[in-house]
Length: 125
Image (cartoon, rainbow, N blue to C red; front, side, top):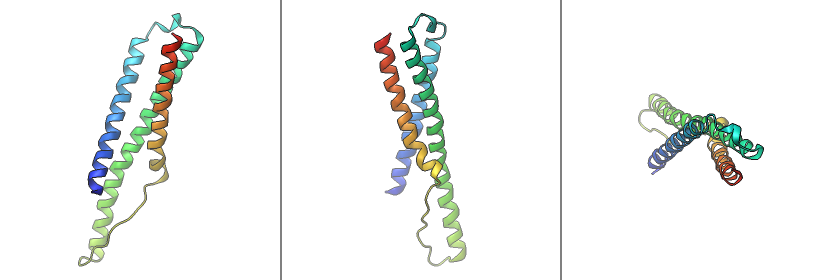
C-alpha cells in the first residue's frame, strides 16, 4: 500500500512539474514582445506569475528528487539490515531531510500564487 502511494505521489509531482514547465514556456513565448502594451498592474501580475511558476518548477523538482532519494535510501537501509542480520530483517524507518519535506508544499503554494497572478493579469488586461 505504501509503495503504491509513493508511486502515485511521484507521478503526481512529475505531472505537475511537466504542466508548470509547459505553462511557463507557453506564457513566455506568447508574451514575447507584447509586454510593452500592458499597463503596470497587468505587467506586474504577469511577472509575478512567471516568477511563481519558475519557483514552483524548481521546488517541485527538488520534491521529485526527494522521492527518488527516498527509494534509494530505503534500498540502502534494507540491504544494511539484511547484511547485519539476514534471518530477521526489521522494518526500516527514516525521515526525509527537511529540504525535501518542505519542497512539495512550497511548490504547491508557488503554483497557487501563479494561478492567482494569472487570473489578476487576465482581469487587468
